[in-house]
Length: 503
Image (cartoon, rainbow, N blue to C red; front, side, top):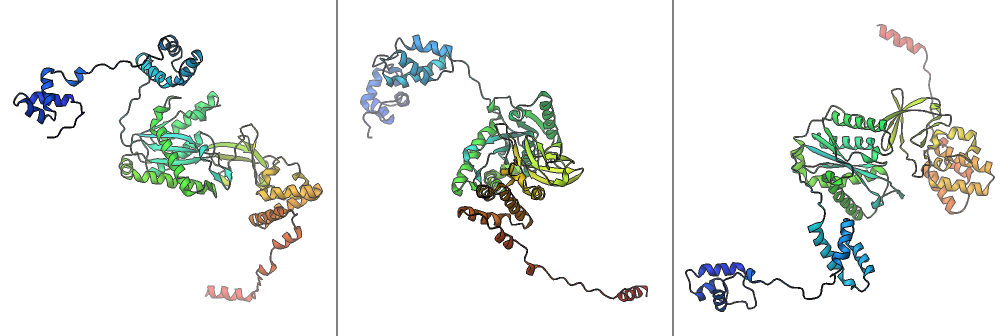
């Protein structure tokens, strides 16, 4: 048997050797324990285990923190337990310039050891056992770091994230506004109907952002609506303690995995720009579907024990009443909305969703408007449709010059650029009249996009639009109109028909 010189005998080998010595001689016992015969004889003279013979390692160089750690560092740790090690290191170097800067790791190890022995007690995380169909979690996560754009315009949004904790089923909804009850109600109901059932318990993060800046009555109303939403689906509403994120850890950690998957998908897509909001939402749905597909068997197993859904969804909107003013508009949540002028003076019932407004007069649905947002500096937002006011603007074209929402009136950027050139090159009255005529042409001839391309070409060529040429281009083609000929039949024909029916 060959032996490997230089290898230390361990406790296991020595115990095996001592056991074999009861029935074998030293050379045979040593060979079976894979040690040399000389080592066997040494063990005979000193039967202590190798671990018992080890001498404690002593310091081989002077302690660089002698007279410093106990006198300077410990008082700082006792006075401010949360103080970072790097801050202590910088302070020690300031007090003792003679210290070598390479003692930082030594100091950090010493601080870590001191905190393990003398530091305060830390909060303990208690892992839970989860049952299928028991718990669903909701939370919101920011997406500003991904720099998603819609036709080049940055999309300010966040994601509503729902997760069944046992199976890992996930549902994500793009939220354009802030964390609100409307966003939670819409996203939660979409998730429950997507999975086909409801868990016994639903947990949220106390809706801290939704409660912000609300008075006591509004907070109570929001709480009652949230409780009623959960009751509609037979769920028990629970909330984690405010500011304690790990109590919602079943979804906080998946936030990171979800955003990492979205980031990877964006990189593989090669672009962060989308044609419209619907395309971006479809992209998010595909990412989440791939994640759910990996948990398919567990999701199917949990779906079987979920509570059945009610017959219909409950309200996932806020409802309010507005009055249309003489400006053919109303203001809601610091946002100015235009509507057709025929609604001036009417009181409208508005259903406020996260991304849209549904307008009703009585029980009749009138239209849907995109939801606007006010700005962080307190200024009002504007949601303006030039089609609502163009007929009045044609009678008062000079109103365009000082119009409060003039920039929002233009449907596309080339229209605004064209107006700037008209104002610079023509008298104000003529410039306003031509701009209003262009807007009317875009509306009446349904050529907004095509006209915008022609105006963009004029702007690029540094020329004014040729109004006569545009009128001819977008005028109705007489040859395309059908020639309708109505032939009147003799009245006696009806007598024949009546006689036939009588017979």
